[in-house]
Image 1 (cartoon, rainbow over the protein chains, first blue to last red):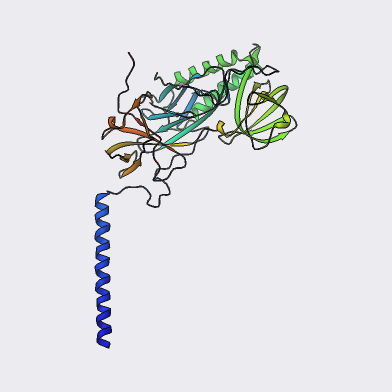
Image 2: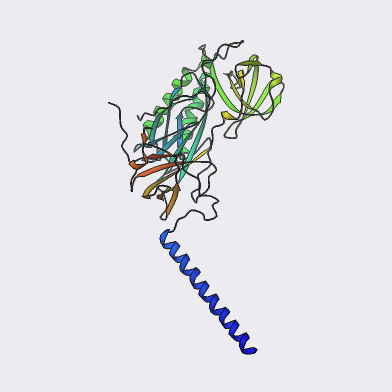
Length: 168
Length: 222
C-alpha cells in the first residue's frame, strides 16, 4: 500500500514537472514571436501618457489667436513659438494639422474654423517623447452682436467647414 | 492714463521676457524685446479704449455654472471661470429661435458673444443655448517611427523610447500627409516618421483614428 502511494506521488510530481516545462517553453516561444511590446498587457492604457491640455505652457506659446476671441472670418493663422525643429500639431474640433517649428522655434499654421465654438490645441511633440499643449477657445460667427432682434444667422454652430493648412 | 498704460505694458513685456524659462524656448534677443514693446505700444495706441469707436469683442463657450441676477458664470473647456454681465438688450437664442433669460439652465452648454467694456468686463450681447456638441472630442497623439507594418498594426519606436510598441489601425483609420492630402496605407513604409491620433481615453487595443506621415512628401497642386 505504502509502495503504491509513493509511486502515485512520484508520478504526480513527474507529470507536474512535464506540464510546467511545457508552459515555460510555450511562453518563451510567444515572446520570441512578439518582441517586447510595451503595451500594457492589462489593456488599461498605452505607456505614453500625454500631457494634459492647459491654457498656458512654458514650452509652447501662441501669439495668435488670443483666448476668448470672436472672429468674423473662418480663416485664421495659429502662430506661436516652441522648441526649435520640433513636430507641432494643431488640433481643431475635428482634424489635426501637423507642422514643424523652424530653427528659431516659430510656427504658423492656417486653419479654417467651424461656425460657432472652436477649440484649438497647439501641441508640440518632441523627439525625446515629451508632449506639451496649449489651448485656445474661439468663436467664429458672422452674427451682428448688437442686433436686438433675431437676424438670419449666416454662421451656425457646428456647420461643416472644410479645413486647409498652409505652411508659412 | 494712457501713459500709465503704456508704461505698464513696457514693464510687463520686459518682465515676461526676463522670467522666461531657460532652455524651454529660444532666448529672445534685445531686438526681439524692443520689437515686442513697439508692437504692444502700437496695439494700445490703436486700441478702441483710447478713443476709436470699434469695441473690443469677445466670444466664450462652456458650461453655465452660476446665475446671479444679470451675471453669468461660465466654466470654459480649460476649466477657467469667466464672468459675464448681460447687457439689458442681450438676445437669447436656442438654435434659430428666440429664447428668454428664464431658459438659461445651470450645467448647460452655452455660447456667449459680446463686448469688453472700459473696466475690462465681459458684457454679453448674444447668448446661444447650446448642447454638448460644442465641446470638441479630446484626442491623444503620439510621435514615432515605423519599424514594421501588418494589416492590423504598426510596430513603432515611439519618440523617446527604445522598445517597439504596437499602434493598432482599423479599416476606419485614415492616412494623410502633412498638408492634409489623403494617402493610402500602402504608401507608408518602414522608417517613416508618423503621428498617430487616438480617441481619448484609449486603451492598448484602440485603433488610430488618423495617421499622418511626416516623411511622405505632400503632393502640391501645380
